[in-house]
Amino acid sequence: MATRSATLAKPSYAKGKQLAQQIFLETMATIDVRHAMLTKVKREGGTLVSGDASVPLLRRPRVIALGKAATRMAATLDEILGSDVEAGVVVAPAEPEKKLDQFRYFRAGHPYPDTGSVQGAGAALELVSGLTGDDLVIFLVSGGGSALFEKPLDPAIALADLAEFNRVLVTGGLPIEQINVLRKHLSAVKGGQLAIQAYPASQVTIFVSDVPEDLPSMVASGPTMPDESTSEQCYSIAEQGGLASKFPASIRKHFAGRTLEETPKPGDSRFENSRYYCLLSNRDAVEAARACADQLGFRSEVDRGDWDRDYQEVARGNLAALDRLAQASGGQPVCLVVGGEVICPVTGPGTGGRNQALALYAAQQIQGQRRVVLSAGTDGRDGNSPVSGAVADGATATRARALGLDPARFLAASDSYHFFRALGDTIETGFTDNNVRDVRLWLDFGSAAL
Image: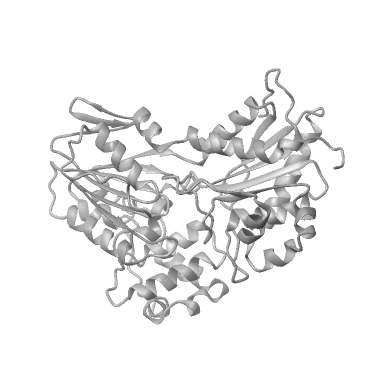
């Protein structure tokens, strides 16, 4: 439902791009992982409480942290527990500024697994082996873990084959849930397999979600959660668009021979002592953005449609919703906030990602209008570029052509990063130690032509 701001200075289109960036940066500050953990996770005497998940601390816990928020989550949990951790493993995309003595750290690859990914997974499996019912394992799981944390079930699958398999999936235009279904059935740590190795210890998983809210077992491909997907689904997905034929031979043979192992399912008794708590999700990000936009004087609204679709289709749908919001605003500047992750097949050899591609496509759709679009990832990285996204307004396409930059050509080459870098309109946050999907902002300042 739309909300009206208190009496504030009317936002100006001349500062539209700056306002969009302000909203995004303030959103990121609001969803800070450390703040969320200190607020929502407590040690109460001999019990760890996180939401509805309460577990007794009978022994000093072991901790496995994996994903883009792993370092921050591990450090904050250690703070909450008063450094009362027996041992831990952290697998993240970057080295921490400070290492805790009781943790082993692994720098791993993203978006494709590397040696650190396999070493980190191996260390985690070793840490949770041979436990008893009196032991406790705390899993801190966040997005990006599917690449950062991996060990193939089949030892014949080489690391290079694993990386190529992930490259085919990530660039093939599949939604994240289908990508992760395939990943789960080749992995010794995904699809609940890590939790099975920790059985019969008590387990609590605190996770930051980068997937649709109704699919929590897809976060990092669900290493600690029962898996609803099946090997039959894998075969069906792989047959779409001839994906299986693009897999390396060591992986392709499992699809051709239909020899994928099934993952542990809901109802498996080995999950009886497992508890789960969602610390942050995309809902938190879009609500924070809406509140910030409202404070800046916009009439703001969250569009909760299903936007995990082709980026051009999503842009057109968002613009239609923006039209409706603008028409109902009585001339007041409006802000439409959208979450999710669009699908953006790679069509060229350039540098960029789904957020910059959407902004580049949208820049052409809003040319000559008093409108602004910002699309950015909350993890600080968009595709294979070093930035989190981009911002564009009604003058972006015109400015670009004046510099000899053809938006359509850059879009076809999947080179949105160099397009926006030349204009100075990339969003650069660095790694955020967070990942709750993407945030898109659509601002409308009235119908007058530029």
